[in-house]
Image 1 (cartoon, chains in turn purple, cyan):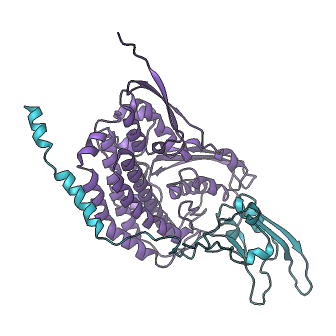
Image 2 (cartoon, rainbow over the protein chains, first blue to last red):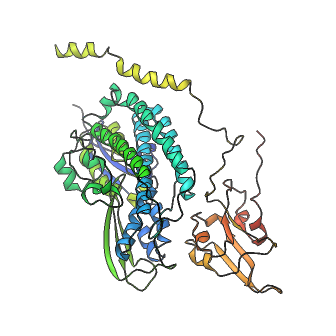
Length: 366
Length: 152
């Protein structure tokens, strides 16, 4: 009697909930999603090709602009790749400080994720509170590097400049206030009935599927897989500090929310320990003014806030810049999980799943 | 039976009261925001603002046109014409052009400079009305960026 028809709906690229310029082609049966096709590339800038025409130091600017909400992690991954190929020993002080900065970056990235994820689902208060704390961290970045978002921090062989005066006090202030603020977010969300209804059993992905798709970071650990690059192959000072990996078995959006909250608490622990155990001494190893790396290929991964961030670098041994630079962005790979997670759900759940995957389109498109 | 339990549980408003308590508590806290442009924040000393040329105590250019900043710049916004002056052993910048509209404020030029001749200052209100105003020449480089005054 009634004719049913599958309709196609475009979501984005100018949709506020797609976190940038992500376009989704949804195939809908009523309000249920039958099929979904992410269209990417609206923010493509050719970062990998641009890097070939830059020197090693200049290419650092490009890494800032990949995942622009966690620029410190991107800088660290790139600089460590160079150091791996150059075979240079980094002073212990630089290692500790880099760990501290990266964890602050992770906190700021997770705060932005919490803010926007909650805003997408409908909890605006958390958005404002989380941005207040993020501002605190961005102030610290400005203090150390001069940039708030695009930090361009760290250099081959250590740090660019020594730790500024007053920085330690600022971090201590932050460590003091932050657990209370975390309790505020949890009071607003964790047991909230609307939050639970919107996130529990939404965007379910099994551990096996998650591994097969190559998902990493909190998305993988939310499915009960114990994998964190910081534990598996400790870099910088992570091996010397005491912290735990956050894992949940729920496989859904709620589990990933809990994983990220736990990660924020662990990050704060790492920050505190790194600050207490900050060694004295040099902040940068002796390096030549113009950086030249030996001929070779190297791949290095670190745990960025979004997941496993890898850089593949080829040096021809002649030039002062990368011969080829390939970036393995966690957001790009995590976006593959969108289709299996949303199939059979409602349109409104797509927004929740994009939020929980925490994609940054600067990194997806590159 | 399960339906009845769920119905009764729906009146357990503890989760919502807990959340509301947080928001109400925040009503009595001090504001963290600043009413820009009436009030302005001061950036930290390392803030990367607009590129400025520096002079030494005698009022001479510190720059000796070694072109390190030109080579270090990833976007190529600096161009210098070196010149000779009587009574000065080193070269001096006859022109020092800087296109602010393409500058990414990375600070690579300042890092490359061996003579502390340039600096990224603490200005952050860099918007201009015309594209020509973003082209900075040597004379403009010493001065602060012209500011637009907001009446209200």
